Image (cartoon, rainbow, N blue to C red; front, side, top):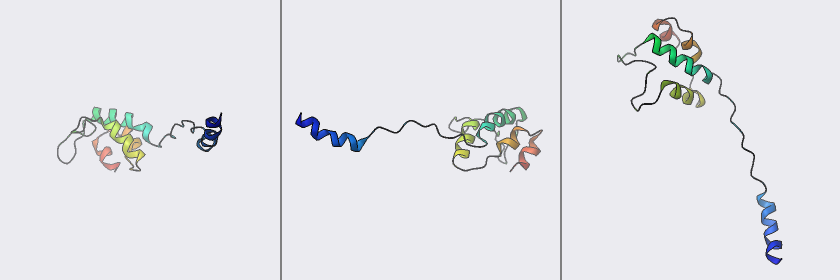
Length: 94
């Protein structure tokens, strides 16, 4: 009984764990998948001649990189890229 009485204040101090809350959606992140698909269709290349929108050197899809960058505050212009008609428009999205 004494142990229960002594551990009761500890339980009150700890309380209940906070409920799991999903993070709010990041604006622009929903366009990353469409932008990735558009880049793959257009087959645009960067200034080094590498395909834009393909896998990174570590094998990570462009869409994943896009979502991570947007979550970290980098504007990836994914909405503009998703609507691009050609590679010149992709370049002007910057």
